Image (cartoon, rainbow, N blue to C red):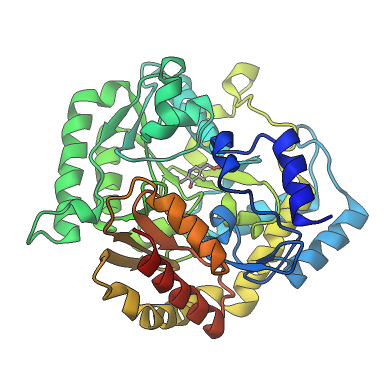
Amino acid sequence: MNNRQLLARSLEAVWHPCTQMKAHETLPLVPISRGEGVWLYDFEGRRYLDAISSWWVNLFGHGNRRINAALREQLERLEHVMLAGFTHEPVVELSERLSALTGPARLGHCFYASDGASATEIALKMSHHYWRNTGRPEKCRPLSLAGSYHGETAGALAVTDVALFRDAYAPLLRPGATVPSPDARLAEAGESAADYAARCAGQLDDYLARHHAETSAFIVEPLVQCAAGMAMHDPEYLRRARTICDKYQVHLIADEIAVGFGRTGSFFAHQQAGIRPDFLCLSKGISGGYLPLSVVLTTDEVYGAFYADELTRGFLHSHSYTGNPLACRAALATLDIFAEDGVVAANRRLAALIDQRAAGLAAHPRVKNFRNRGMIWAFEVDSDDPQFSRKVFAQALERGLLLRPIGRSLYFMPPYVIDEEEIGHLVAQTLAVIGEVP
Ligand SMILES: *Cc1c(COP(=O)(O)O)cnc(C)c1O
């Protein structure tokens, strides 16, 4: 196999996601033969530093020895069994450990699926069904933030506020409501991020004062709205949102599909606000970037509202691969690495180093809003070119770097195993790319 052969076959047979396929007439697909650490290799020895963790899923590098070993062992015992009516060790241990990580006010009940969008759907359905089971079936409308992204299946898309993904399918979707985003870039001159967050929370309060009777849940991406271009907000927003949701009896869903597992500097992002959501959605980093797995964690109170003699009060949702043992084993190996290597603390030192090395970027005349939260860095680049993101992507590949800007927002979300030399490559090549694109 060589690069050219694989590309030709792929274009014949594979319909690639999130892509206008005709664009590949001029911008080739990138063939990958293997991965090691932060690097992805093609068939001819070219390599790319995976600065976006393969769409935000990878935590400890490609081909991680410890996760590989755990998977091999699991493979010898049990590859899969259905989770309705059956159970197995990896899913039980993973549920216990994830619940324990939610802290003393535990989210003690774990419901599994295979991707992030399904986790969103599960949280939305569970919230609605909770209100139905507790005699308030009119509470059936979810609320989300402006610029929100919660996945692209029809239910998840209804709470996703990204026109590019949503507009073509609008007639298929239930109309959803949004409230203003606490995105700190939108603060007025002289207004702090926390003040702006408080102002936006006031707008949430106003909305729910009028609509709480029909609102089931408020779904939020805590601290960083990644798909909106790494829009970051102050934890004050989450503290206030928790109080407001309690006041109006609306569930708070924390969609930590992208920001969980240490990405924002704490194990879960909502922990920086000292709150507990009613539902916590996890995916992406959960399996270290190895296998599709997602989970929704919830409270005793929600679980209790479904626990009854009647079948129809139960949560009758399922996916064939729910709780797959291999995926759960990869997740357990990922949690082992967090515990054994003290990853959250180590990431603080790593983030400080990256910050220091990226000073030249922050000071670049074309760079605006340089920002960082945990292991995410982002900034806007001054450009009028409508092809900006495509040109950055192509130019970065030329320089051995995988970057995938969102509009004019460039970001780094590297695997946690990036070393000093690799940080140097990341920053130097990004600076070079910014110098090259119009
Ligand atoms: C990626 C993402 C999703 C959707 O997950 P998929 O596995 O792509 O379906 C949902 N919410 C957030 C915040 C995400 O970043």
